[in-house]
Image (cartoon, rainbow, N blue to C red; front, side, top):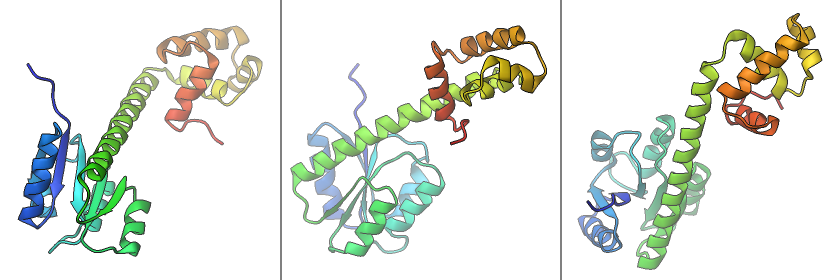
Amino acid sequence: MSPARDRVFVIDDDPGVRKSLSRLLRSAGFEALTFESTEEFTRQVPADASGCLILDISMPGRDGLTLQQEMSFRRSGLPIVFLTGHGDISKSVQAMKSGATDFLTKPVDDEVLLRAVHQALEVERSGRRDRREVADVEKHLAALTKREREVFEGVVAGRLNKQIAGDMKITEKTVKVHRGRVMEKMRASSLAELVRLADRVGLRKS
């Protein structure tokens, strides 16, 4: 069984552009799926799809920037490489500020496009790893009892066992027991690791 290929979605209202990009991407070993409009793309592709998106910025109906905003609202992790036939600086700035990984003008050099696609896919893989880690931390956090959660928050806030015991009106020995269970349930091997996990889910106040 052959390994799964990275998936690249292409949205462009020009059938010639769709055909040439699809041919280039497939020759480079990608799975290419093309769409003539942003509406067709959103009807067929779920928000949690993996891969990357090559998106024409100026199209009839809903344009590329509008789709980018909607994808951000839906928390899609799909990185976007914008293509445009017009060197519109203001639109490129807006696209990059909104999280696009690249902004290329047509006609685009094949190597430049493929390099942008590789970079976008690496961004997507990194983001997917991050989201998976956050989900794991949240799952472990949910397994803590109320008392363990209070100890956890005290520890990552930099408070000593004695201080936490005073805050919670329990003995220092009981804090140590809770702390050990927190380390075990959060699968943390050190205080530094516990703090890093708290940072991943935004539990520490700056």
